[in-house]
Length: 536
Image (cartoon, rainbow, N blue to C red; front, top):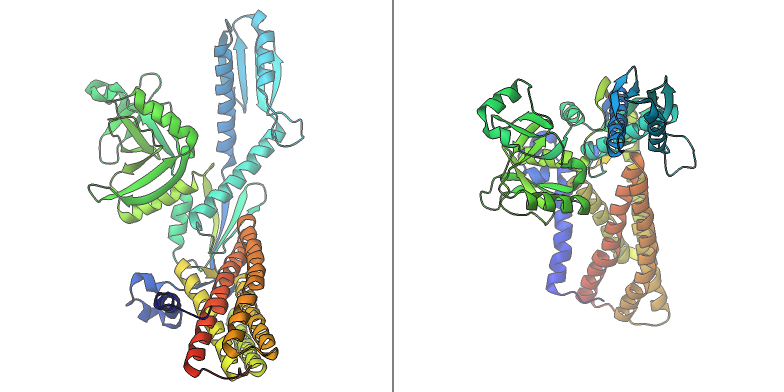
């Protein structure tokens, strides 16, 4: 375990050097960092409690969501009545927050009421509640009235808020390292706090964008000048829609949406394999990949339009069946706009419009005096740990442990800088915890080496046995903690995620520095000095 080949030494020292390069910009003044390459301008951002940031209060437009839910119920009723034999209606329309209808024949009202009652499903199939989505009433001899129940309205509101929070989290903090706060406030509001936010306009832009994506077949009327003119005036044939194109012009497409953004499994920016211009790659889930394959197979030679936010980005011709479930969107993209669109598509569309009702910049909650006091306390703690290692294990082994500890801190800082992470008090707690675990690993190794020395093993044998027998308990302890960190990341949010990220990074770095880097330092010292006894 004490032999290191040249490529292993190169890999270990290279990893430490890269970590140092990414951590170094944190010690360079901001005005001088601008001369560095873009990759090395990233630093650790301080959180809302340390340096302030953006505070927004968003109001969810639940009215439009409820209107859409009512319209969906109306469409369901129309579909059910069409599938029923010889069941005609005079009208079915939305009026005063309810669906009202009237049958052609008095004899059909009982059958209609039975269909309407069956169409009313449980509000939440996963709960034991018997609440239904709609309430059905008969009005007169041939009429009926359908309203959305209070339980369904409450469920729709709750689901819309939860979906909005999740979409915002993916849009603003896709990596989970910003430690932002997203929480429901009241019945229809969301609290958003983004620590260290430098560009509030960019955050507002991401909030307001919708990213509604759909794939629709282009209708043959698009080739007719008269039909296009009628479409521009709003006079469209049944089942058709009129959308402008991004590069000019417009097309008449099917109103029916074949595939929506909900079908996307992933999206990423890239370059066209031939033209080398920016595109957005996408992949469908299994269900929609099958639908897309059948659609393209049945419409060879026809065109389909990619519609984003009521604008046609591209409308290519189908030259062959696309059965792989993946493809790309090309348009007037730059690398940045392609990356932004991929981010929005991955996050999904907001279920409702968000209105910014309050916006302000928040100052640091702890104040500069508290930050300075924290720095002093950290330095005292590190010095105390360093002195303890020297006193307990002597100058040589204490120095090896302290070098490993310093390298661990540098690598953590480098990793957080690379991710552009935001550091708040929970994140600092995670770092301090991993520093303690890194020292604990060195203590375990050195105590094992000391035991091997006391039973009479020679230096080389004692060190090799000490590192080998300490590896399993060190890995067991750190892997179990890593599992806890991963669980916190996926279950928690905001500051809890920040703590989990720093804890996970610290665990990985502490194992590297204690088990690999410290062992390299020990082996180098052993080969150079060849001691007869170990000063431990």
